[in-house]
Length: 78
Image 1 (tube, rainbow, N blue to C red):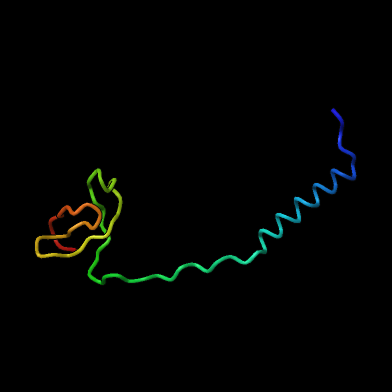
Image 2 (cartoon, one colour; image 1 turned 90 degrees about the vertical axis):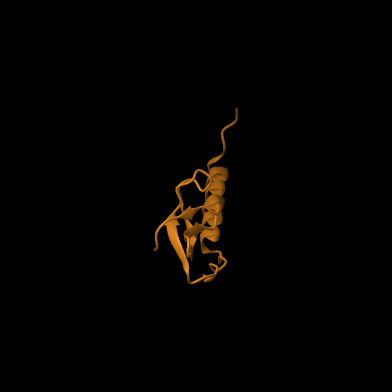
């Protein structure tokens, strides 16, 4: 196997550095703005396997909090 010449190795290193810096300095897209869908929504943990016990949005109803992910009703008010 042939070894790289020192000049070629230096050129490859300089190219890698240039690409890395160009990627860091390239402008990115702005973050999406937040939207408010419903003021009455409450973030609570949903204790079902469908929602994987994660925090999801719940809507307040007379029956209790209804999960938007799976539709289960959690008792009690927010």
